[in-house]
Image (cartoon, rainbow, N blue to C red):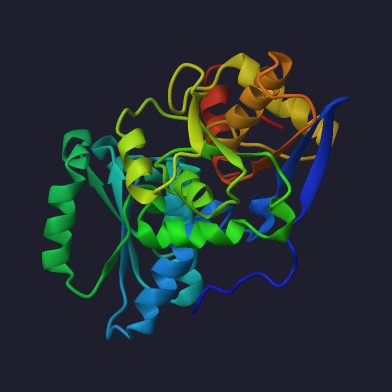
Length: 302
């Protein structure tokens, strides 16, 4: 099964923030119910180019953490395309707990094999990748988060005629592939802002390697660390959904939108700016987040 470009246009919804600034959100989360948002585009050329080579026994291998949107998307793709998949999962302690994890349970039900490795082993993914290439020479090995050259080229399709008129293009940043693609293929006059969900100093190098342009800046929006959820994050996400009818997840897009509103209030954007934020999906992560919040007797994400 080749991934197809969607026939229907992905909606761009307008949100008025204040009189002289207009904020919009592009609903990439609606592109596919299971292969959501930027994950669809990051896998687009990876999987299509791979299948075009007509491997005798297709096999897709990738990496991710306990609640990884990427693992979820790859497992769904494997199920739909009837391609066996293998997920290398960070955290050996999850070996006996995966049934209690909605993301890993979903991946397993999609037929994905799960191999759990220690966090130390996971940090040396280059060594793991080399081992896997030797063991599965025909396999497509997709890096963590799906970020590689094919992914960056796929992100180009998040841009179209509708996105050309914006002054600022905003995206959450995890592994750097999405912001690199937007930076490389956007209009010359546009400025790109990446909202970092993770404190990773190697991101700058990764993004610079994948785009030749210097039209982007990075803003910290981790709010205490990757995957950490503060009460203020929950309040913002729930209030946002109530106001605009748009669900956000707490790791990437929720924190990005919260930070965008803060920057607007601080006067970061010039008057008459048109700002477009990309909703990069990942809503599957809400269930796992709520399990953790419930154990802590905290408010849930609605």
